[in-house]
Length: 452
Image (tube, rainbow, N blue to C red):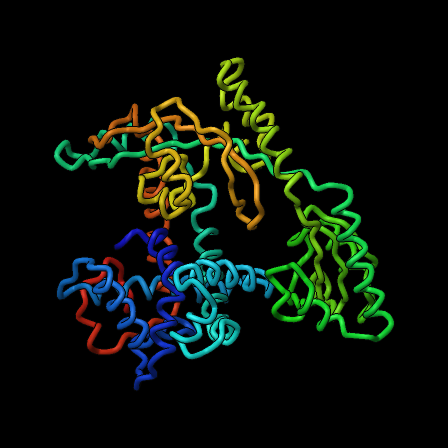
């Protein structure tokens, strides 16, 4: 069976493309499998097969059977998640949709080009995706329950590697480890004062009835997750947003508007639409203080000083990153940037380019141990900053070994152990769950027994 963990993640990444193909052309469909109360359509299978062809992946007479088994597994996860009453909130779904759409729009370049290609707006397209994203998040949550608590010891890693036949030891492409020290500009008191005055003015206009909260949020809010919907967030659970937002959302009465309050993102006001226990629907309006040129200049000056310390070799890059970097994720790993595709600190060059083309260009000509001068950067939330990049390691293409590739081998050993847990789970749950296959798939050679 194809690695189910990776396959499920790949399914998530391909979801937009999959539904995009289906959205463009409606065809006569049929149900080819049923798992619990969930069904698999012929179009689901056909779309995944077409994606393999488009990606020039090898296919053979058994490919559709393999794809069917992966879909059966995903639907079995969903069926069990439904039995266990697992839930995902509207807020989680919306955040996932926003994340995926940001990536998807980056491929088109603009919402206009996207709409031209699909013949519908981004919001209409997101609406079509919503149920599928809900199912995918439930499947991921269920898989997480199966594999939680699994880990591997160093002896298990060594045993796993030593069991690989010599002629099957994988060839590792060139990889890099890149660190950064990020400095975000300090917001001036004047910019904060201006932002607060603006949102207080908007709140006063809403209170006076000059305009609705939704209208004001649509026109002025700087919150990308809700501005296009008149500020509306649905199904937000306590702890999902910053504490200040929660504090107001869970004490307001229906229709009531909060006072202006400050968070790390800027100044907010919110209006409660409805509360259901520990879950709320609310309108949200954000005004973020704007960074001016002088703030950026001060951030650069601060990094210039850091750069001189690095040149003087008075402290290691990792120590300085841990103390002074404004990037919370990388500073906790000695400044090393985490590869979002693998969870490790190593990148292949093409992965680094996909993650951040600017970083890939900047470190391409660095020698191991060298670092760049302070350079402009854009943070994950779209804000401007400065950073110093550092090339910690660069490996040449080579056969895997326990010294240079321990982390990768550890990940592979962990994946194998998780896969074994998943296989055992499938054997147990496929017996307890109703599964029906169309006749033309009953002769498939599966890794698991799906028909009892």
